[in-house]
Length: 187
Length: 249
Image (cartoon, rainbow over all chains, first blue to last red; front, side, top):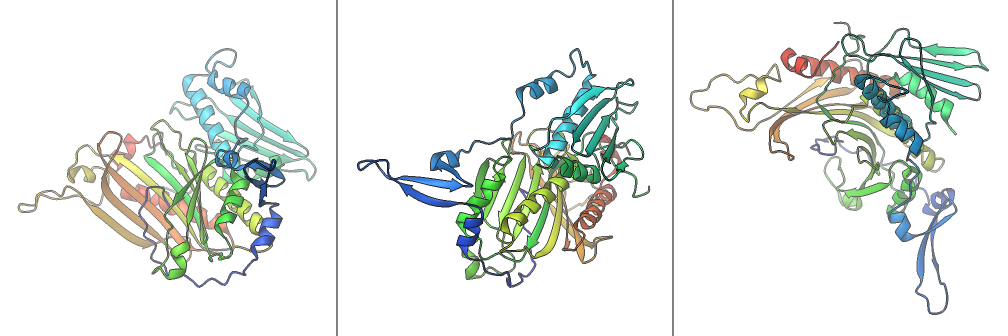
């Protein structure tokens, strides 16, 4: 449902047959609960919320710290793609930044930073290698239609399986590659 | 043109893409659980908003306690919407320079987050998926606030000269068609005139939604839904308009 869209849901609701769960079992599974603590006889009771073993005051839950920020070095690298030593053209650099955003949307902050290197033809090669997995994404230089085509390759060294695009593609990397990359980089 | 041809625009008029799953209402989900679920997502979605619930059918008293929660990414471009009977992932454009991440990335993210939700609820609740939904919302500037400008964008909505009526100032239009390649699914197209808040300029909002019965193969359903939307969009819009959006394939 769009964030500004009109609702046009006219389907009749099916009656729920979902198995009822006792709230405590879900709470217990997530290791969560609410506790009241006192710091001393005169201190006001302080409400604390615990999630997965963390004990945080409610205030920090309302403004949670989050771990989705990228390392400063990587942000600087992305900002300076047009400058030496990478020295990409403006369009190529923009396509690289867009590609990285696509990957972050798809896979989220757990996506490790890739190794990035230019090849002899001016393409940028992004590589991830973890355990038996190797994933590679190549972003070509802009063509005469100002398209930055890309190719992908994936290998499972243990199973000796590999997959990849058959020819350079436009747009975002294929769902197949994103799924493989997601699996390969899962913690 | 073969439907295997990938269609690409340099400046697509896409404003928002939404992937969604509707499921049997999980009565056991209480307000507190929504907060706990947020705990599993707040690395990527550190902000929240409460929204009016989207109700199905005729509301009954049991739905009075329904709630819908938005979990937003730090830049507020990505949104998870959670309700006891639905789960949506939205990507939205907030600035004109925002790069559209493409269907592949949006769907992969939706699938990943849906799996996270299912993992949190198992083994107590296994979500019984009932329907899938894919929506593309396009916002296109109009040259003027007259209906005639709409005909420059949508091929099927020309407005001939009317002696008495003149030109409409505002309009709404919608059609529904069976979706191709996705059983028990419909493509709904809705167009309406609107005004962009940032500069009060006239725009056309074109929304394409495919909704259908959930299937075992979610990837195949969303692929088919995406194809219906892409080729439906090409059928609906004029070639001249497509050229202004930088169509390259």
